[in-house]
Image (cartoon, rainbow, N blue to C red; front, side):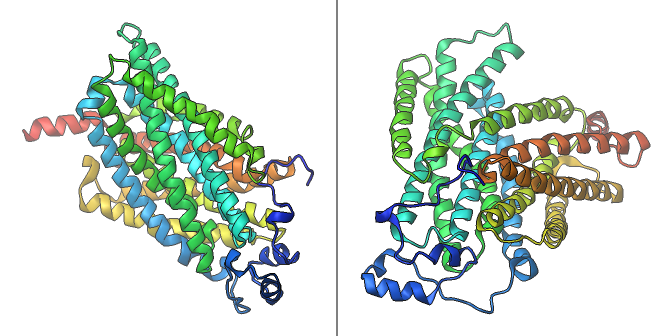
Length: 466
């Protein structure tokens, strides 16, 4: 690799370097060394290190630990996606959303941007953990502060982009509406505040989670991205609804403008912190392209979803879980490959792919049991529905795993850090692919009479029953 590679800088200066120069090489194999302990005693700096027991009998993750570690986080992510979907449905009928309908447009844009930021952080920090960079105190603190500051810069800028974009789309979709400067500032301020506070909460949580994983010898690549995805959506939804509700009462005043100016002024403050941090400095002006492109691609998926959500039953309920779970499995794979590339170790591609694909089965079964038990979506739960949805989920997961592998290797060969580029493109791609597959299968089920998924049939049945 050349020096142009866009990644967290691994070299550290004389005041920020562990005494033992072989420590990094050893940590690339995920082990602490007795030589480190000797040098620690000689330099009287044991308080600066987190020391982990060496385990010579440690088994490879792809053989034993991948499914054990990743499966609980995936089940939690599915539950989180279902809760986020129900929360979104409730918020769409709340007073704050009914008064400002452009918030409906803001939601998917903001969730997409924020989700990619937090998953990128999880991938970057997981790589740092597995390379052993978090074992040395000064480096650990520098990486945590730098990444959290970077996340604030990215979230504030993304929040501003999401707010202005949703307002502009509102002008296009509703040309006759009385949109004003105050409404644009209101939406932008709400977006920036919720994005900033959500990133602070999620960033601290993810850093703590990965440090705990490192301490207890758990590979964070297996759990970090799904946890960031599921928890991030719920936290962002709650914060956006709360912020929008507070600011809406002051929409016609200068209050929203003051909030916007305060949040905007924080960008150079956090930017300066990032600029002075050698570990994340290069990321300040890079990695924006995949975020913006992913937002555009996901917007296309949103337009497609909006076109069919009122035509077929269950689209709004099933789509987030279908694409969310496939994206989580793909992000785990991409994050693991990226770590192996940084550490110059080998990944058992076939074993990991088959393991992740197999893990999709129990997680989707749990999801289908949940929606059947609670009669969600008013769907016709018969054999053809369950069989078709399960086949789609397996196809989406397989496609996402393949895309994740190809993209990660391709970006690495081109000199870009996959931790900062792959996940936005990967999740945006599966958004479009998953939505197309689901709508196509629902159309086939309805046209063949296997299961009537049309909303008209639902309305007719409701009329007959009443």
